[in-house]
Length: 147
Image (cartoon, rainbow, N blue to C red; front, side, top):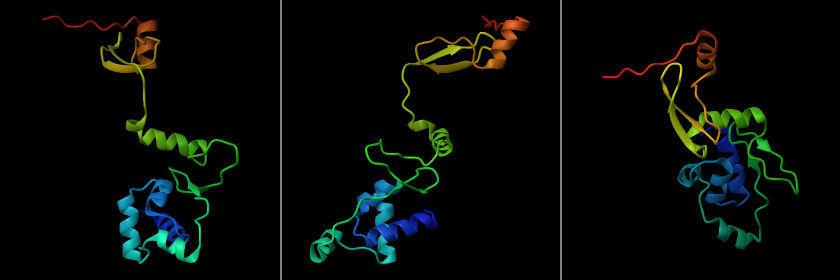
């Protein structure tokens, strides 16, 4: 957990936000937020605090999943998750296991014979552009060994 996340947790707890709301906002687990709050003296039932003080928590701020910067949301526009396109691309490239891909096809490259997976309806014959160039201009073709 970064120092920026710790300060955001402290601020949001003082504004009577729940562990669950804070965890969803920062992309952390509820147990991580709860244990940090208990160690920092920020624990307690926020529902009771809201009832006794007649305070309602304000709207939750949103933070970039990649860098943690606060994002200003615009009304009547889809909720933003990342502050910039660079952050979006960086985060998705480092979390490839969370990408939902459809129609995986596994085939062997015509040039090098390496097995690769492609997605979508258009068939691919080569694992990479250099293999395509070798096959097209040098005539290199993979021949499977038969035993």
